[in-house]
Image (cartoon, rainbow, N blue to C red; front, side, top):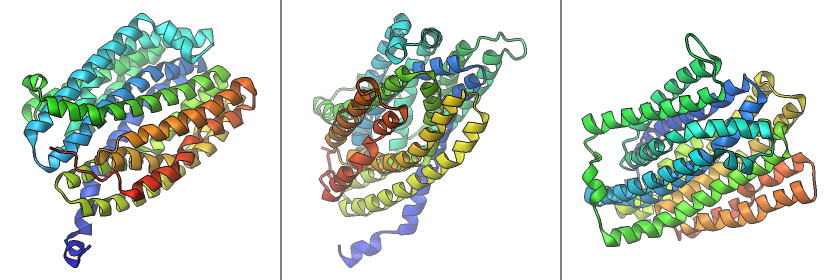
Length: 454
């Protein structure tokens, strides 16, 4: 690199840019964790059965959410680079493809979940009371799926064009709505009926509707950069759609493989017993809380590197990449601290059996190591590799390490060898640590650094 190139890199501007992206997105992630943890906290105060039912029932949305994230993230591969070129017309076309497909997927999930809630719950649990509560939850909460699809694609697209604050306000309004409706309907406050787990489902639906109302207001009255118009859905470009499929499909499959893997982990734990399910429900909320900044860093990485590559600044993208990888390691350490601090608090305040509390204590310690690997891998796979269109590698490592190593060994340990639940849990968490050397090697090869725009 020449002296001129070195001096052209402004570290102060980089820090300001990263802060402007990471802080709002970390807040958004924190709010989203708050939304998902509200049900756990409030239902945990009711009883262990409804907590387990809602937790396992939410695995359906978890899978849908990851498919939607895969679609929007795959679109973001192209959108971020075309944003570097300021090609708004092409961005609108990609945006339209992502919106149409996401709404269809959300509608499909709604129909299947509404018709077969009990059958779906049988996948995740063998406890009849948990299945019954989860089925009640699913039949109501599935009405939020299409709304969630619209919101996710819109807000993720806005992030790619560096309009990140709208998501913060939308998610904040959503969380406040969820808290209020949950409080009234789960516990029957004021004049409202006490409907328990159904109240949590209604609260989620109301929250998503409020989120969409905020987005519509923003789109009509404030958004001048990339306002959504229905004619965007009619735009077609055969070559661009070919690119969309080429870079989106591996991301969709990657997120689906990962999401199904996490649900498989939940199913294995679900068949071990209610104590393990309840403990894992709490641990997953803490894990999400510990990763809010790390997920913000990975999103900022994808936006920043994708824009730089689209602008033709590949050497600058390398420097950015190094800084973001270091930052992701530091945020992983922060995540470890959050998990360890949360451990005594959760043990003190959650209404669990003694056996569930013992499992919770152990799971928290194991999770404190896991989050470091997840922080680094998320930034590398979701942020760095996808920014340059290297979308197949993440799919490869998740198939090998999540499914062929972690889930397979956990399944054998749980159901064939009948090993202790503590050993099973460690095996189910092994993938993030095992794949880390391979993602770092891929990063240093710079095979991911490509301009994929036309």
